[in-house]
Length: 138
Image 1 (spheres, rainbow, N blue to C red):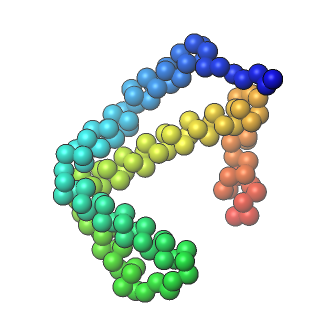
Image 2 (tube, rainbow, N blue to C red):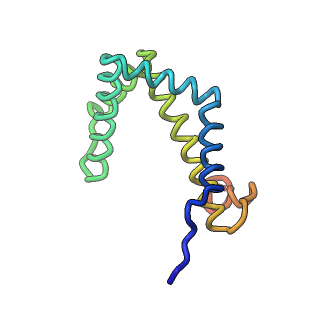
């Protein structure tokens, strides 16, 4: 039988401490407020959704090998400009990026720790990432 790590109180307690730490960060608080403003603004939601749908359609067409026209590209740009011109929709887009960045950082650090069996160093974190070597960009 394979032994597994259980969510011991120590791990859970530390995870909850991390959650509290994230909640206390000014960028989290600001992002949360901007997301709440977005959720209360149907016009901003509509503008943002239109941009996301146009971008998704463009990506899907590109993957399927369907030639993209100037009209297709302009349609996405027009919708993107509408988001940039709407402070609430723009705030949501920026907040989404910030929160995804926090999530990505925590996930990446935890994955590396589990892979290495130790806390990763800066060198460990840069290996295999762009400009850290291995990606061919240098």
